[in-house]
Amino acid sequence: MDINFDFVLAHWPLFAFALLCMVVIQVFKMAVWTEKRATGPGKAAAFFWWGRKTLSLQALIFGALVGLIPGMPIGGGFTDTIASKVLYYAVGGVLSTFLFNVLKGFAKRRGIDLRLPGLDEKKPPEIDYREPEDL
Image: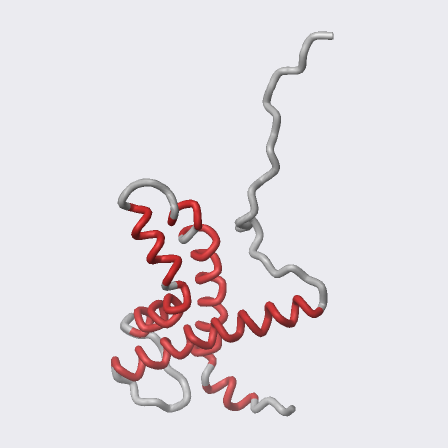
């Protein structure tokens, strides 16, 4: 399989954003939209519950919002309109989800557990803080 590097270089903003978005969405998934917050007491739990339920759309929404930032570059000779930027970066967000799943599958076949450092949903080990008894 040959990779057309001219295409990749022409669309460097799309691929750069997709890689950035891949990390940002995983951080939000592990640190912000946690199951503990979504099932906790109070009105805020409903907000976090919906945040967890819409995880698959967040990359698309994040991309669309980034496309609204003035001065964001667009590659490939597309017209420099707001609509084209929004769609361009929204596709970058969707691409980030696809790239993360490909990377995760590739790592799994190699026996690597792909996680971001410090952002693990597993509980930390219980630590016994009691004072040792006098001997």
